[in-house]
Image 1 (tube, rainbow, N blue to C red):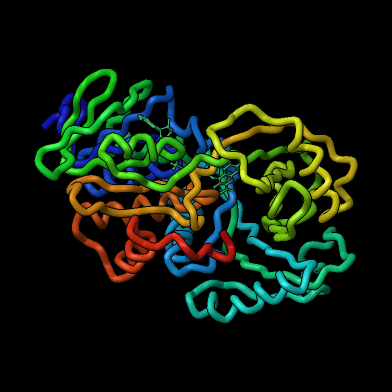
Image 2 (cartoon, helix red, strand yellow):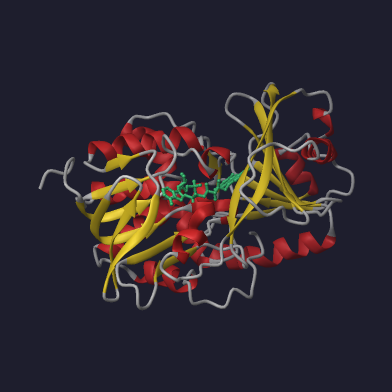
Length: 388
Ligand SMILES: Cc1cc2nc3c(=O)[nH]c(=O)nc-3n(C[C@H](O)[C@H](O)[C@H](O)COP(=O)(O)OP(=O)(O)OC[C@H]3O[C@@H](n4cnc5c(N)ncnc54)[C@H](O)[C@@H]3O)c2cc1C
């Protein structure tokens, strides 16, 4: 069958974002016939390009550690294996503690994280200041350091996955909205768009902030709500630090705050609004920068005169417990969810892509099965991951 003209595929992926594009890459590489549909004009134009690029395996849940490790392997070897510079940098991650509660929480996790294969250690105040000398030393207790984590450009990565998925025969169609599903008995066998109908053995919902209304077309209520977050980037300065720094403190109007120094020297920072701001908003607010800049200077006072170049706003597709929903739905054979990526969809993209490829090819190993059970649609959504 001609891959370029056929309207029947092994897998249709709805959404060419952080999840859909690497999934297309791994599936097409495995020889599957793939169609990716996106309502926007190009890859990565929704949440993907709003992500700041953090990639970590430093989590407090085994399924997320495993997905993070799979992704780190892909991102860190991408340029050597495929030739594209995706701005990968292995700067590590550091969760810093200025409060006893956070120090205790982080320290209590370390033995467990190490037992799950993470390279992570606790650094006391002076050890941490050796690695990040410009941290505000006042009341600093210490922090974790995971040297294998890093960062890359979300949009350049999406372009790279797209280029190679296309070379392996995946078909991408943009400016095309999926309006409904085609079902036969209890099977999902294709989709209807504003341009036509397509048939496939599998249909993957990777629609990010739109996953819920899309799934509702089948009568499946997925608990994913778009939740808007903002970020900012500064002018470039000489290298000051390497890791992504996560400050877990609450401040008026925000929960945690995180930032890193891009390979070009610019500082990129982001914070979690408190209370959450629901909706697919993409227009930057006037409230973000005054609060976030204060938090940046609080953690790293040396940055007090740095100039901000740009602020932007995007979406976390949030679930009630802060973890993704991945896998099958009983009674809807052929329908797969890869939704609710929260603030971690970029870092999980290649891991999720490999997992779904194994699922579709019926090649799941024990770790894949563990992830699918943990991130199942049928879990209770009661306990939040500590490092979400
Ligand atoms: C400020 C900010 C900072 C962030 N920082 C990080 C970070 O450091 N690390 C990290 O891992 N994550 C980060 N994230 C989160 C990350 O951006 C998301 O988790 C991730 O992009 C979600 O991926 P996705 O593929 O589910 O959704 P998306 O990337 O949004 O892709 C979904 C796609 O589906 C398409 N679509 C939806 N409905 C339809 C339809 N009916 N028909 C056709 N197409 C459709 C959309 O057009 C879109 O292109 C950040 C997010 C923000 C806003």
